Length: 354
Image 1 (spheres, rainbow, N blue to C red):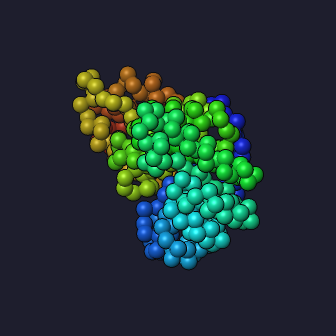
Image 2 (image 1 turned 90 degrees about the vertical axis):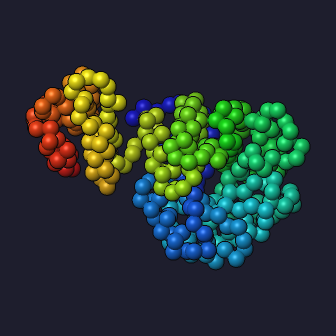
Image 3 (image 1 turned 45 degrees about the horizontal axis):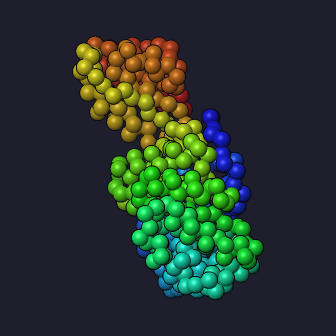
């Protein structure tokens, strides 16, 4: 698998997962359940884990949630990050409850003295912190600035100095804006200043597929420059989509393998033998692949121009002619079949691969 040159960042551990330097990019997500509902939250965590999520964040808005958090951590198959705002006591209790990491924005946690109390607890329990700066929570003195990316980095560096004064460096950072180019600029500026690993995210990215496209644009540019150690694709709705999209982005860059088949299909055109309904055929085949936990490629091509020639590297595929279809493996013809039997025959061949 091709990899990009990675900016050298320090390595931290969230539970047993290494983050930073040349370690694999880690896929994260966040539950959207009420954390008070332990069973519902755990159900969603298991769903996320089953599709490849490696770290999950849960919201802890009140002290009364801590006992629930403890139960969630005990049963979670993946590391749990406690998301805390406004009250340093919640952060401290989340650490004591066994959180694998906490996420705070020091600017809204109650002042430097409160942050120092959190740092003491982090030292004691030997877990990392994610320092997150979002454009929506910039201090008043920065809110009217013309360059929001510069302001974000300035705020992050101010926050980091509090931790550095206390000799605490078990940190990862995030700089999130809702605009793609501003997010890119902020992360480029930050990496020149510090070596703490970076969590990439585009905040308030929107609904699917817009959020996926905008995140792919943002992450693709930064990751190709070696910037980014963990990612979360923010999508309004089911967080499972966040994980699936993250894997699609990372696998397309050669940075992570999807643990499921990869469908290749041509866009269709005006050639005579594309009068078949290729879209519905591709969707039907893709649906049949969803529960397969293995990484291989399947090509669905509309004519002899696109397949098997252009799809010769696919593990298995099908190309349609006027009256027949050709199943091929690694570019080599396997057998001709009737178009009406195409979907069933290809699925049968895929199963034989397994």
